[in-house]
Amino acid sequence: MAKSKLTVFNDPFDTLLPQPNPTIQRRRVDSHPGTINQVKQLTYDTFEVTVNYTADQGFINAKAGQYGTLQVPGIKRPRAYSFAKTPELENPNEVTFFIRLVEGGELSAWLQDKDRTGEKVTVSGPMGHFGLDNSHKTIVCIAGGSGMSAIKAIVEHACQQSLARDCYFFYGARTQADLYCLDEMADLAKKWNPKHHFEFIPVLSEEPEDSNWQGPKGFVTEYFNEHYLANKKFDVNNVSAFFCGPPPMIDHGVEVLTEVGLSSRDIRYDKFEDVRSPAPVVDNTKCVLCDECLLVKPVENCIVEATGFTLSGIGKNRKVSEFKTIQPGQTSGLYYNSLFIDDSECIRCYACIDACPHDAISPQNKAIPKTLKEL
Image (cartoon, rainbow, N blue to C red; front, side):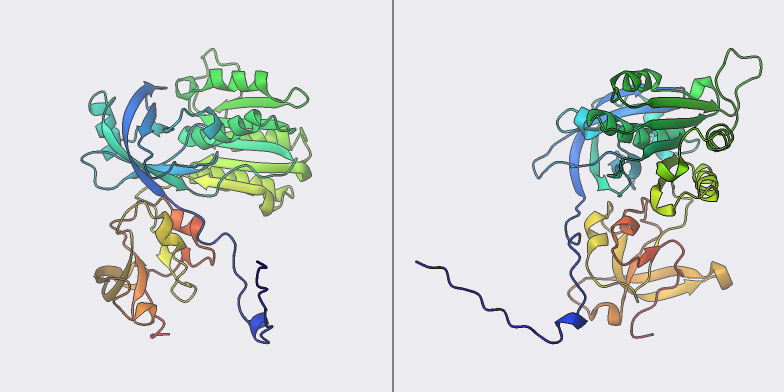
């Protein structure tokens, strides 16, 4: 039996409609119950935590450079951490995080309290779009602190794929006591594509003058600028740069690279934020109700539909103090209500910002919600 032929009529108004974005509705964050099966102390304040999770409803199909969240007993909000291994090197149903202890931090206190091996947790992911590009350009990575995790995963992935690219990995730490993964970096150098160069450069900012350290000293971005950029160790027009770690380090690194002419298109970064960072805000005038932010949210009520806002504060400090949550599908939508990020529930993972295809979510947006009716 012959198949019927579908007749397509050309609508003169088709050209006025927005074209579909093929990336929409393809990103998902999945949550899984898991068990901590190993806690390894890397330095005096940094631990490697490996979680084995149940994959009844799918796997965490992360790419090197992405991150996930870890929720532990007794702490309300989960914490976001980069995956510390490329997926090719992880065991089935496992993810690995590097967790740096923070003074006064809830999860730090939980981790230090006792051996957490065997503890039941919840792991979610993947999130973010930080990762290796598809070019053949020289890879320049700069990381600080626990920013080692995402960059390590990225260079591991490049090594596993035997990419035909040179790589320079600069790592900023305070002292020798803060260094870790040195054996892994040496192993990468041995296994790197033999026709190309891999170099790991640790730079210490607070190492005592009388120590036995013979390596570079100073701030990592300054050392990179003075000893590699200024000496033209590589062609800056043939570079893809990757940063991960504290925002000040990233800001300075981006500045020195753009000053010598590197395009912003060739600079990628993952800034480590925490609850002290500003929460993202939804600009409802740009929102198209694609639900991408809702598909990646790691906390049930971090993004809600809301109305009845009560404001407090004066001037720049004016913000929402109270609001009423509305059930989607039972209201008049964003014409009367607002898609709202609850500051008290938000964990500052910024996954919603990465997922939004219309740049409607940013911590720089005005914190006072607006509905379409008001505008």
